[in-house]
Length: 487
Image (cartoon, rainbow, N blue to C red; front, top):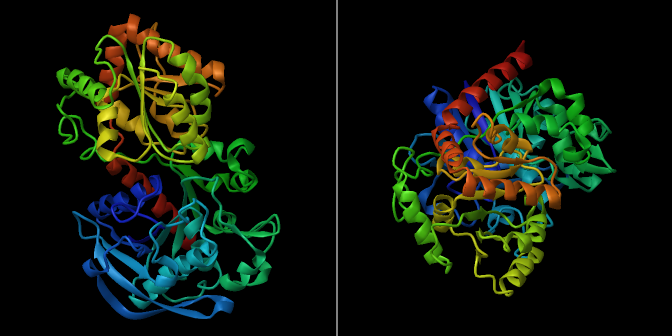
């Protein structure tokens, strides 16, 4: 198949979340299955133009009442493979240090036009370069206009009119909702501004339009695919998700086990694996020293690496933390996020707890060392479409403590003491008492049922959630979409 994958970010070029991992890794595995894949994304300021090659001449992108905007297509390659990456260059929209927001965290005022340009520009790039995709795979609201355009403005296009579309929902909370006049930029006709398609709350909702128009839909875990159809997780679009439930699938993200492997991890002071765990004790002691904690093998270290935002349950964890720190445990936290969370963590630090350490930044090396040096991993997300850190924790022999939602529900097996089963600890219902008791259960198990704890470590470390498996699931999804479009 010929596959055009369109995304606002992709590793290693730009990353703010899990979307970038899917967009930057999945094409490699699709190519290994024999498919012809092209990845399209913006060229942001952080992407060196000098490493790219201009292809195809000037690119005209129709933008309705704005007129045709002229950009360029620059070609690069995904590292380690021959998958072409087409970077759309239009400096007025994309020559910025961050994909979506100002330094204060506010979304750019012109995000509506920026991502309509990306959506339409991806299709125009394919036309200019003569690439006729069987399926166009788009991701989240930033590119959700593509299915709308394929079903309207490009419906009779000889190159693109027969392309199926797949929309992956990485996070339903972000929908791309803008003023009604965006219809004149999309230029698909005001008849599509209705309660079924693009209109919500008298605004243009790009994600809603994509949900309605895409040939097939998927989310990044089976449980999240079901949750999207409920008011609690659908953020006002649950009705659309229910209407299109027959078209909605769930495919778990994979994990890069070349990067996240305790047996070869270059960020660790000692390597280890399931059959020789001695190095994990070395990593624990080194982590305690690095973060200024007493070096004590006899207490459990509870680790957390996260964006410090409401979605991740950080506010509730901070409520529980004073009681948690009264136990004989150590807690380490790494992350950055919203100002209120930084202030709360710093206030906790000023209370002088000798068993609490934190770093308010992103530090990839330290993230690896926390996964390896911790005994238990905290992940109390309110919702988690897929999640990656619980997968890293399983591989590093650090049983995760999770809220049983989304991908956390799908990837962590709850500890079953009578039958000596499980890979972690699940909290059902995210309340103060439920979270405290689940953490207490995990700590009690570490102290008093160490054989069971060691069994959880071994089972988790032997599990694999691979991109190869995910790629085969996407391949089946694409074939189904093509069949529906053309059959």
